[in-house]
Amino acid sequence: MTMPQADIDILLIGHVTRDLTTDDPAGPYRLGGTVSFAAVTALRLGRRPTVVTRAAPETDLSELPAAVDIRVLPSTTTTTFANLYTAAGRVQYCYTPAPAITAADIPPTLRQPQAVLLGPLVDEITSDVATIFHDRTLVAAVPQGWMRRWDTTGRVFSKPWASAEAILPHLGVLVLSLEDIDFDLSRLEPFFRQIDMVVLTEYRDGSTIYRRDAEGEITRFKIPPRPATEIDPTGAGDIFATAFLIRLQETNDPVQAARFANVTASFGVEAVGVTGIPNREQVLAYMAEHPMAL
Image 1 (cartoon, rainbow, N blue to C red):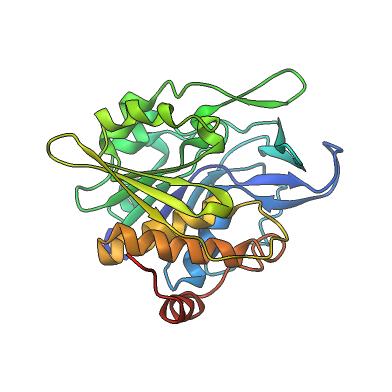
Image 2 (image 1 turned 180 degrees about the vertical axis):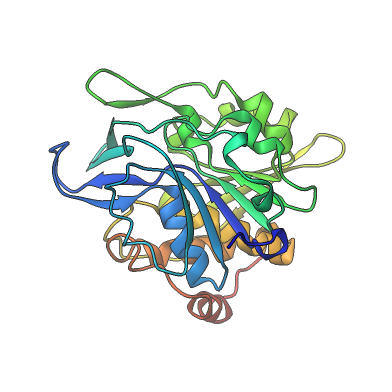
């Protein structure tokens, strides 16, 4: 049965992935991708996620909880990544990228959710997707997949975000990492011509909110981290972005939303995969016990 528009809570768009657990492209994997981490995060935080993705029919999606409403578009391949963590940072490889997701792939029944997270991994979300949602929908994006290229070996490198001007005006907030901009803060400046809020995640240093006022002045708010014992950092940015989007949509307070997201993501890295993602009560309890000095 098709769900009515009013029943769509949070919509997550992007590829699920096969995240390899060895360096063998045909080897064992666990389910990954922004939408996978986002779906589990949303559930743990008491929300009802719907996922639109592409994957090959044989892809095992059983790691996603049964409560996730997942809409799988046709594909002969599933996007596959290998993430290697070194002292100098992450080295990433991409194999068998699945095809794009376009506005035509999003049915009218999914176009009026409370919130939307665009989570591209391999430039797979076309720019027209950002334009189709209701004015009351809070739309956020993590642009890493629009800012990636890979060579013939699959080795991933950064690239300029070619579709930014077509997408940014339709977003309420952009969430990205220092890694996404190659640790060059000057690369944030062009975004502010078209969007009022950017949130930068800074790994163990927490996050920073950048807001543009009516006069065009940019104000920064530094949000401290929750200290964590890191086990698996994969997906931390996706957990953060989802938690931030949810709390911003609930409270319209970006500072509290970023603190909420910092805490959520810090718990998430303390276990493998999605197993460490906390529930809402854990996050709020920590925030109550450790109030943030403003």
